[in-house]
Image (cartoon, rainbow, N blue to C red):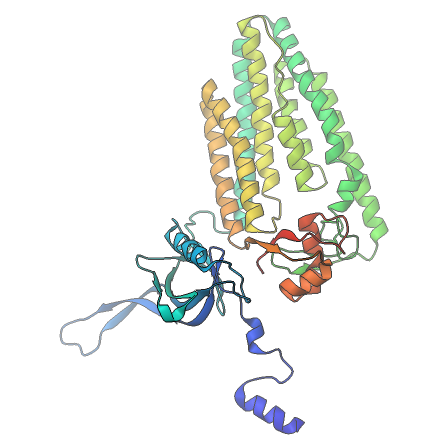
Length: 466
């Protein structure tokens, strides 16, 4: 019988030991609205220009690139589906209509083609209803594959390099502009230096209380080791880390002790560098030294080891820890405001550089990070604009544009989060098997929910779609 089975499998193009074909199908949805699929079709080809000439029997066909892919899906939505859920069918229909009428491209999950970015043309959604259909609606959805509006930035590596370059330009522009402006605002050198010292002292106190979070050995080790072998709360890549699509990197080290020592030594060195920079800043005696050493301290915090989240929180705190001490004369007010502007601009720019080194696990997380950093950059832009610092404003604007382009490119490879609810609290292994048919992704669910114990997962949570 085995010989006969193998022969039939060979003729039919199947493998008797492989999984059934239907297990590879994806749950269909558009912009998060789920539905069932009856049939579908796609059109493919090349865009060509046909050149016909007199007295020639054939034409010259000029290739213009791949043609636009059109996808047509014939499906239905039904009341309280046991397969995809959905709830009330009227609300499902309204949600599907709203998804198709929303501006810009959206994400289509096709059962066999997978995730695609598509746009819905006019009359692209046609919904039918009849008495015989009862509590269901059949529809035809026509989609057109949509590409990215990407010009100079085509890869995340090039984009991250552009962000780093723009940050360095911003730092140098801010330092030079601030030095020139403060010198022009100071009437008395002694009083001006005293005002700068008082303003800086307030900020350096915040730095001293913040660097412990950045250079904390526990955070450093947590961002070094992965959750597969070193605990469910570890977020590093050494020893396994759940990726955005459920892929797990199991790269490990043959000598964990040596790696621990190296990470601890680096954390201690970083703390010493930051503390040394703060001491040098407090001991400065000239305007040039004050401004340049503020930039050096911000750079030390940015380059410190530890997790990206810790650095982002520290830089965000430092960016908004500005002195509000009352200054009697207008000249002192201008000097203090210039120093606060330097701190705000440099810390906000450093947040951008730290953010592009993050590895968001979903499109929702990437969007939240983009919104958070952009809001901080906007504060710096408004400050520079109100003061008339044109060079700093333009440098901030260039940095913001490169950051938005970078995060936009990076988020295209990520999937959205979806709401999941269960009737009872289940173990993480059970949920991973139920959602992804892969128990190896249990650590991903644990990290997303920060649950105290993996045997009792929340009944409601947001999880990756796939």
